[in-house]
Length: 113
Length: 111
View 1 (cartoon, rainbow over the protein chains, first blue to last red):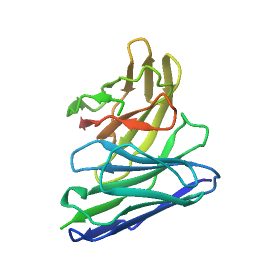
View 2: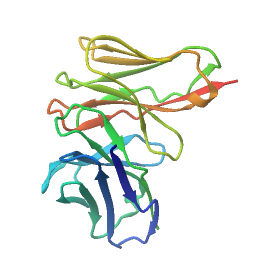
View 3: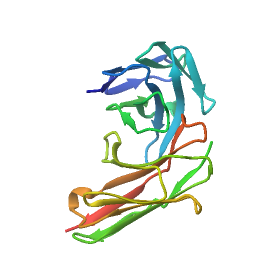
View 4: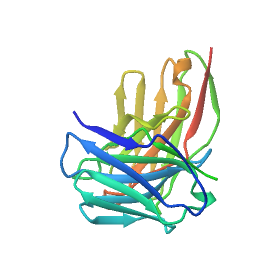
């Protein structure tokens, strides 16, 4: 069966520090991968999605970036964190064909101080 | 970004009643729709998917889709206190790869 791993579960970072969040999927090949952010009391905001290695689509301009160095690995990065980057970051995967169910990792709660 | 709209609630229903959750979407090209449940501090979990006009039933849950009205709903029969959570509606963009979510409806089932 397919599983998705996301780490760390919680993270406290100072303003201006870099960020790297990693997500990996097991049990499937060529998944679509997603990064979402959920600010306190807000909905899920789609940040990036990827349909293949090196293919990244950005939905919202910001100081975050994403990379997909391997088929089942998706990384969210920032060079300098802002206070407004605090939130619950979620990685998800779906089948390559598109228009199918997406499944989420456990999430990373990021607090920028 | 294509919009998915939900009433934020909270929606309060007594135990055993039917909870009705609604969602509208703006992208007429959307082909597939989903309902997720999210407990506080946890990640969303998939409840239902629906692709065709009409009703789809799974246990106590029924999803309804009306593409002409760009409307999706979720009915929860015999609501239980454990159903208390935020329910998120999601729809793919016309491309089929960008999955967009509404802000969620908070449901409270009172004993």
